[in-house]
Amino acid sequence: MRLKNVFEPDYYFENAFMVSPSFLLSRGIGVLILDIDNTLVTYADAYPTEAVTKWINEMKQGGVRLAIASNNHGKRVDTFAESLDVFTVSDSNKPSRKAVDVICRRFSITPDKAAVIGDQIFTDVLCANRAGAVAILVKPLPYRENLFFKFKRLLEKPIIKKFKHKHPDKCFAKGENEK
Ligand SMILES: [Mg+2]
Image 1 (tube, rainbow, N blue to C red):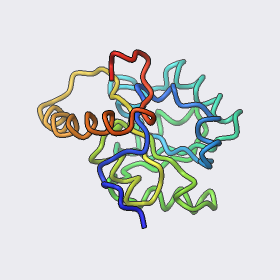
Image 2: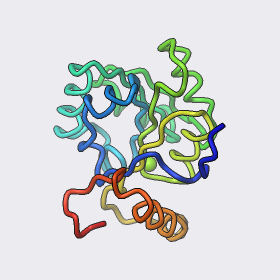
Image 3: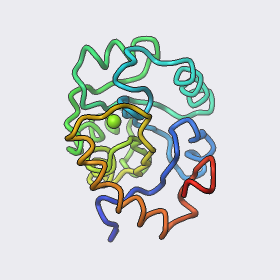
């Protein structure tokens, strides 16, 4: 039985694009479930940036299968995902585990072979842990956030700090001084 704190990620990356196919595959992860907002792009970007498209192509070529699970609505998600050709679940209600279950059924895998990558502990990480998937937390992309988000970030802070302190080997940052 896993006695992991439901708010604790398995890995922390400074940004999603640092995650490589070999990192995932060497850990038995064949399916990567992507959050969109503040993970891949900000709310201001309707379409994938060049960096997103490049990274997604690298993942596919490296043998990682991809899906999107976003709490945003259908139109936003469909517009974003159109050029990427990945399976999408919009209005996914994370932290509900439902989207992970739907995606795992679609790819015929068990949740432990999937990772959820996202910028929020109380939606993305909690969703992954509830489903029994691997939780990869990333630092949110810089964007002006409203008060509700600011409050959530405040609550996330001590959890991230503790995780970085406890598991420096599971944290990947560009600059060591950021840890
Ligand atoms: Mg997000």
